[in-house]
Length: 380
Image (cartoon, rainbow, N blue to C red):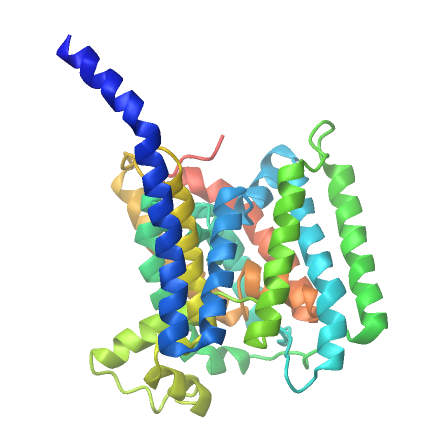
C-alpha cells in the first residue's frame, strides 16, 4: 500500500516538477545569454543565442547531417538529405545578395580545392559515419548525453588543433586558386546545381520515402534563418571546426606550449585569439550554444538525460577516440566539416563546398561499412 501511495503521489506531482524544471532551463538559457552580453558585449550574447537556436533545432527536430547521409546510402531514404539541400538553398538566396552588397563587412566560407582538401573531406566522411556524428552532430550528441560523442569530442578538438598546426604543409601539396560564384549569376548557378542534385537524390530514393515531412521542412527553415543570422552578426558563415581547435590550442598554451613559431597558430589573428577569451570568439560561442541547446532539449524531455552507458567492446571505444582525432584533423585539411564546408561553403558560393560534398559522401560510403566492424552497431 505504501508503494502504491508513493507512486500515486509521485505521479500527481510529476507535472509540477516537470514544469519547474523546464522553467529553470529557460531561465538558465536566458541567464547565460545575459551573462555573455554583460561581460563580452551584446553581439557575443546574440551569437550564443544563435548557437542555442542551432542546438535546439538540431536536437529538438532531429535534423542532422551524418544520419541522413547514412539513410540515403544504406536504405535510399532521401528526405534528410533533401532537407539539407533545401536549407542550403534558402541560405544562398539571402547570403549571395548580402555578400555582394557588404563586401567589406561580410565574408563567405571560401577555400581552395586541393589534394589535401579532397582527401580530408573523404576521411571526414568516413570517420563521421563511424561515430554517427559530424562536427555539429558531435556537439549535439555530446550535449544530449551520448557517451560515444562525449568520448570523441575532446579528441576532435585535439585533432583540429593538430590539423591546423600542419595545415600549411598539407596545402603546399597543391591546390587550385579559390573559385567563388558571385552575384545573381552565381546564385542562379548554385540554385540550379542544388536543384539538380535534389532531383537525382529524389529519383534514386526509394518510393514511399521521398516526401519531406513537415518537421524537416520546419527545421530547414529555422536552420537557414539562424545561419543567415550568424552571417550578419558574426560577419562570417556558420562554422564549427575552428572553435574546437582553438580550445585545444588554448589548452596547449596553458600547459606551457609555445605556438608562436607555428605557421597557423602563430599568425597574428590566431595568436590574438589565443590570448583573448573564448567568449569573444564567434565560432566558440556558437559551438557552446549548440552543446547547451542540445542539453536543454534533452533535459526538457522526461528522462531525456537518463541514457544508459552503452555496452560496447573495448575496440569500439578505441574507434571512437581514433574517429574523433580523424574528424578534427581531416576537417582542418578540408577547410571545414559538413557545416563550415558543405553547408556554408555552397551557400556562399565557394567551389570547395561542392568538392567537399562529393568527397565527403564518397567517404561516408566507406564509413557505413566500417562502423559495424569496430563494434559500433549500425543504426537500424
